[in-house]
Image (cartoon, rainbow, N blue to C red; front, side, top):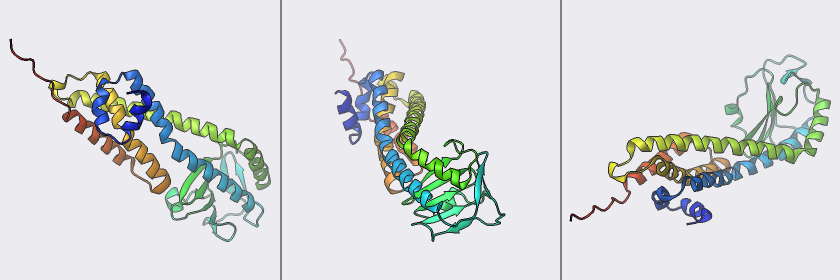
Length: 259
């Protein structure tokens, strides 16, 4: 079974997990890199969509009559004191929020489908219920007035795809690192749970763990990004369940006949 056949079959065939004990660990490592590439496709699409939509909306907002504000040392400050966040749905297709008090949370924003929120330390773009946060300091916005912010947005559009590429690269490295750590822990658990008659090495257990996480991880990525948020604990439990099930349903080695 070549690399791409392994990837394809691991997406729907549970028996592939058992077969993985014969897969070289180098092949399993490459497999994880390919799976990670699949996993980041849905969130990458959402990232591009949210940023494009959010930047366009933010540009239109800055031309409207809104409370005066500035960003100082990566923190939002309104020129006039407001005890409550400024919230309006009259400026854009969605909601616009200005909050320098720190009272608006991502949980509060989940009630809205579309909009832009300038919070104390970050701006959040809402696109069909999906949130994309951009830290002021991370984006290079340290101290800006609304006019300077408008100019920065125009400059940002010129390097938009570079920013997206770097963001996706960071996402890819983060997901791959998390996957390798999780697989290594799962393989270690396998050392304790493996049937004695199976005689599985750590390398074999690691390859099995790599295949076991494929189906849940890809499904989790698609559902979480495009349909509905899924607790990561559910992903972990399903992966462990598939792994343990595969360990205990391995074919028993044939006993050698007596002489």
